[in-house]
Image 1 (cartoon, each protein chain N blue to C red):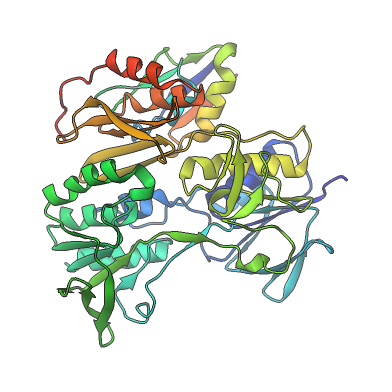
Image 2 (image 1 turned 45 degrees about the vertical axis):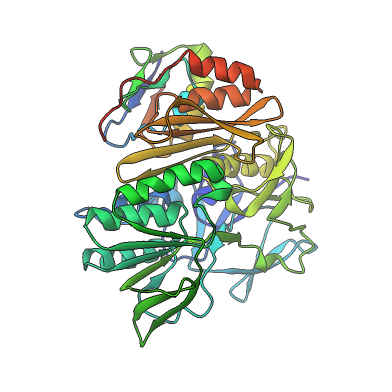
Length: 408
Length: 66
């Protein structure tokens, strides 16, 4: 069936890359991009990094101008409109009481941050997902807020960095015994936690938030260890869930995300998915996974749309996951998967300023974590992509000792 | 001959380009992106460099094709 109308739901990175890729593939039909935020598509990594820096601009890091999207790419933009339902039998997306017809659909609705139950009615309590969240957090930091981060993940760590840069009192509360357990494993999570302590952050692990208290504005956070921490700003970074509620009743299969094969095709013909919302079969590891990383969202958006408009044979999407995070002037980079049988520090040592840790599953290298080793990390990404054995990886590491410690 | 240009203000050495086109890009120990050619891209590396340009998280790379 030929495709005349492409609809992309979700106007963030994956959605933007989808409409760009459709045009690049030579698609001349109509392209509609639907997004629930009123803003032009913008980049999210800067929201917890550059946007929170003192003395910088707080403009949204917009990808493309309205003019580029309208005139050059001929995209019908429907911003500030929320997709509420999907009927694949009739080929329509329900948007604010109207219906938008499609021949091919890319679902790129991303994920929704988890919030603390009963806390979001107070001023000063934020998740960090949107530019509006980032602006509010930035204003509070600039105003000298006593800051509490709920969750010691990457969002919490990056906001903590921004707060410490202003010498503000910072407390991080993590429910698990170590930070970043799922992202980098227990041992390396504990190693990275040292960065918080060395930078003057009060880190509480294995502690729950019992309540966030205040009249209209947050005043304190009550913890399960019996303490209470005074707070003017609370940022909740306890993970997110895929935004799939609008697909209820559509028949599109959803598990940990929209279930897709290696070409990013869903269970329903003509419907593809990309970005945080997709759980696809990643041929690089032979298993299904859902990622919340910039790199995969960009690449999936492009491939999902090219496959959806079907002007060329379908491409598969295989990737070695990659993410990065910047804490207190340190660059943390991770490639591959963290669920390993063994983690070994292959270069440097855990204590100080830089190290490489390798992750083994069976006799295969499946992951690598780098602290301040930007010259090394991508070489391990290449090894993982090539299915390198564990012994080859260790040998590779031994042949590349770390250069003298850089100052940071 | 196609040429690749690095915007040094935008580049923060995340290394995606190196993983996609290792014959052309390499991040150094000091955290600087180094071009392994003088910027000229031969046909053999063109597809990989196109992927690197598209894959750069800070849109710091531009490919100029004649």
